[in-house]
Each structure stands twice: as C-alpha cells, then as structure tokens.
Amino acid sequence: MPKIWKCDLCGYVHKGADAPPSCPVCGADPSHFSTLEIKPSPSPARQAKAWQCSICDHITQDSAAPNFCPVCGAAAALFHPYRATETAFTPVDIHKVVILGAGIAGMTAAEEARRLAPEIEITLVSREIGLPYYRLNLTRFLAGEVAEEDLLMQQQSWFDLHKIDFISGEAYAIDRDTRKITLRDGQQIGYDRLILANGAHPFIPPIPGANREGVMVLRTLEHARKIISSLRPGCRAVCIGGGLLGLESAWAMQRRSADVTVLEGFVWLLPRQLPPAAAALLRSHLQAQQMSIECGVQVKEFTGDEAVHGVLLEDGREIPADLVLLATGVRPNSHLARQCGLKVKQGVVVNDRLFTSDPQILAAGDVTEHQGRVYGIWPASYAQGLVAGANAVGGTAEFPGLPMTNRIKVLDVELFSIGQIQAIDASTRLFEVQENGNYRGLACHDGQVVGAVLYGDMQLTARLQEAVEQGLRVQELFGLYDYFPGLKQLAG
Image (cartoon, rainbow, N blue to C red; front, side, top):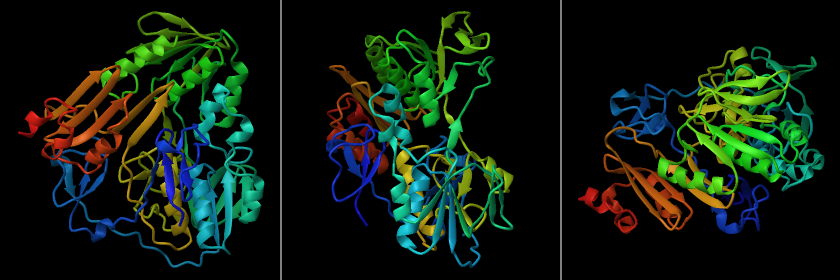
C-alpha cells in the first residue's frame, strides 16, 4: 500500500512514495507534511486490562485507570473496568455496499472497498448536488484563492473507471429488516453492507433572529456561493465564533474587502487549542491586520426586519451587520441512525472495527463516535474511511484512534497544539515562555506531560508531540529543560 502523508497545517491526506510538491488544499510546501501511520491495534478484548470512563465512555488500555480522562478530564475514581464484547457478525454474502456521504470518509471507504473487492457493487450517495469536493478548501474558495473547479476531489471519469455508482440524493429512511434505503424522491436502494459517512451539520444557536436573511453558515459549497454573492467592498460582516472555522472565514471575508468583526463568547480566541497568553498574541496580530475582535461577549439577538441589520449584545451594544456568519460548531448527522434504531450518543457509536450496533452497518467520519470521541478532523475521517471500507467487504481492520493534534496557519502565523492544554485541577502545571513574539507552553498533570502549544516558532513540534503522545514524565524531558524554566525543578 502507498505511503500516507498528512498536511500538518490543514489535515489533507496524500498517498504516494513522497509528499506532494504542495498541498492542494492549503498550499503548504513538503516540509509541512508528515507520515500518517494507520496501524491495526489490539482489540480491547485481547488486552489484559481496560478501563472505561463513566462520564464519556472513553476506553484506556492499561493495567490501571489513568489519573484523569484525556477526553473529558474525569478523575480516576470515575473509571471502571471494561471488558469488550465483540459484535456478533451474521454471516452474509456481500454483493453490494452502499455508502451514504461523499466527503473524505465516504470517498476513502469507496476507494478502499473497490481496491479490496474488484467485483462487488458499490453505490455512493451524496446529499449535495454535484461531484464530491474538498470541504477543507471552502475558506480558500471564499477568499478567492482557488476556483470552484479546483475544489473537486475526483471527476466523473474516476467513478466510471472504478465502477462506483455515484448518486445525488438524500437518504430519507433506513429499513434494517429489509436492508433498504429510501431516498427523498422515493427511490429505494438495497444493500448487504451499509456505511454511514453522512458527516455533520452546522449548529445554529437558539438566538432570536437567527432565521433572518443574511444570517449564514459555512459547511457546503452552496453556503460558500451564497456568502460570496452577498459580499461586496465595505460590507459589514460579523463572524460569531473565534474558533478555527470562525477565524479562517473572517480572514477569507476580509480578503474580499469586507469590514469584519469576530465575536467570541469565550474570554480568548481558539479556547480549545490555545491558553490565554498565546491567544493574546494571536489576537494582537489579527487586530494589527485591521480585524476587529471582541472576546467574552454574548449575543442577545440578530436585529433587523426580513434581513439582518445588526448584532445586539447582552451588554446593550449593537454592532451593525449586513452579513452574519455563524461559526459555532457542528453536530453529527445522526438522524438516520436514530430513525432506524442504531445506538447513538454524541454520534453514531462504533467499535474498533467501526461497526455500529447493527452488524451490517458501519460508520465513519464526522457522524461517528469512537470510544467516547467525535473527532471532526480530516485525518481521522480518512483513517476511519479506510477501515470501514475494508471491513464492509469482509476485512478485519481496526481503528486505533488518533491524537488530537492541531497545526494551523492563521494569516501568516503558525500554531501547534496537542493534548490537554487547560488546567484540569490543582495538579496541572503550565510552563510558558514568551520571547521575540513567539510562545511555547507545556502542560503537565501529576508530573506527566499532557499537552503542548507553540506559537510562531515551530522547531520543537516533533519533540513536544512525542512527549505528549508517549505520556512522558518530567524526569524524561531533560532535553527540554532549557526551553521551559522551572521544569527541571519539578522533575526534582
């Protein structure tokens, strides 16, 4: 199988002997690509010990419960011994595989299923009209950096060559007894194995006026087209949300000469990726680029008549707005799974082989919840697509989970964040250094490295990622003592 490369800036995945000369999504050069290893991991049933968090269901393979849950932060006392029960697979002749969703998870599943089963019938159903495209590239399209035709993952000739039936249509219902899917237009499609890769949808907060014309989201190509058609020089655009999508969208709209204001309810930007000190550097940099940013503010209402005219804050101020973009997170498209009776929590619950509670249905990508975690990142969707595609045609692959790592570029600033960077309790220590406009931070919990952040200077990326992923103790970080004053004293 070809080597797999991951763009560390945007998450794009490339297969080949070498990294590509540039990332087709974000334009990064080969130095920003790293290898993505997707290795089968031992099933929990074959481990000597496993522990499950009572709060979020995350499973840790170890001889003892962890000090805290890496997903939700629950203490060790909230873990209980876990004994896996394998899904009882019903023997079945697999002649037809249907995949719902044509994002990276669905496309990867289709390609892998075809590679392993050349004669099987494969149908890929996309809710969106038109061929599959790189969703990661929508903000660059919004910024005018790439043309619409550059978004496509594959041309129709690719589907013809691989004998994959591509259908534009929306699945309305799944009948697990008859193994049939009904589309909105009444068409029915039978399956032997079904893969749910139908992604996620934008979360619309319950704010009065959210249904006014001009209040928009960015998740699909159609959304991007609508935003572009509404933008003009001097357009007053307000972006609700200071996370990754919010900042990228704000930057893109500013590139089209809009006057942009970012409103973040948390007290600093990128609260999932950055501690306050690093976020303050980013905020100052963005403001120097003529972007207006306010943190710690709450939206009361989107004012106007039929169209939005402004954003009313809880403190009584009103910010004029011709366009409001909601970048307030996404939720898994779990309605079909709920309708047909599959086990659903945050997302559609799957085991390590990505089978759902129905032995003929698998799930991959943003719709999926694996060991209590909904990833929502490109590399995880790609890896899950590989596993689901293989297992749908009789394979035995397993998804080992992936570390939550973010390396991104906001304007011309590079950021790296991995692991748990916020204080869990009084046993958490954050070692921070700011110099020459750069920032580095290292989070330790009970003497173990649990998170790290870099802003600007990326030279320590590989070493910090290794320290977090391997859960090193501070006594093992002697090579980093000079970079983080106080770390050596903690090590004793």
